[in-house]
Image (tube, rainbow, N blue to C red; front, side, top):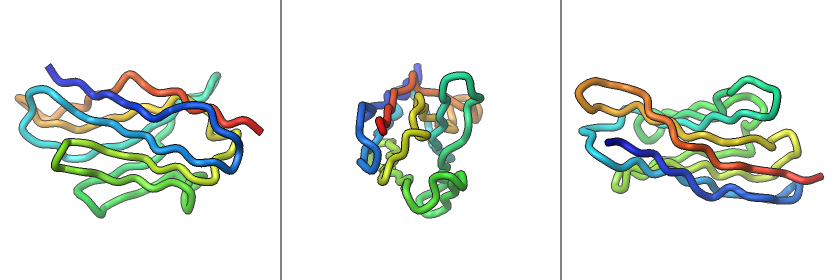
Length: 118
């Protein structure tokens, strides 16, 4: 059984920083890509940042220059360093990984709340 577990969310003032972590565990053979999504109240879930391999990254426009996604393949983890946080970054953040079990499938974490106060 595959699990993705996120950590690192919390309450921070505008302009502050947080680092989210997500680790995949269980029986799988490879990770093709990992990403972070977020969902704010009343809004659709949106892609925040995506990494394929180590250096192939992309970001939604609203976080470019403030957020950095990175991977550590040695422990099947992905991170999201979030700097200069804004109240509009408030959301539940979800980790997703494209994993090879019997086939390639997407697996989601349970989400971690990030709240930015003004």
